[in-house]
Length: 93
Image (cartoon, rainbow, N blue to C red; front, side, top):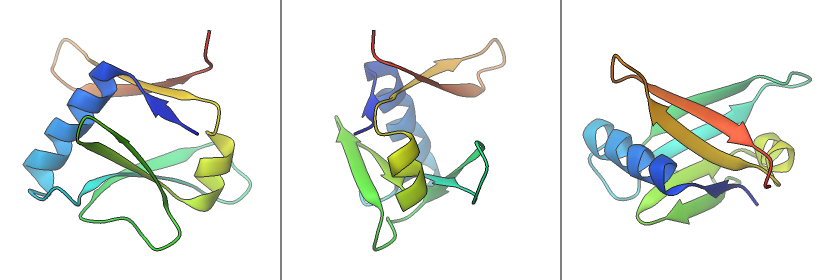
């Protein structure tokens, strides 16, 4: 199952709180058919079949294909020099 670093959970929680304003909201990661690209959206709640990953109040919802593709990954995040969030995915060490 996808895991989040502490930094990622802090930034996911901050983005969700500012955008959605509810504790049910989160980031939803989805994958288009036959691509390696992922879409990330801020949503007020997960869809029925989404896998939910939580850490310290941060919630990430994974659509079925994304959940399979990211099952062994770690979600990390950083702020760049313009305070824009950059997410990255890594394999465990």
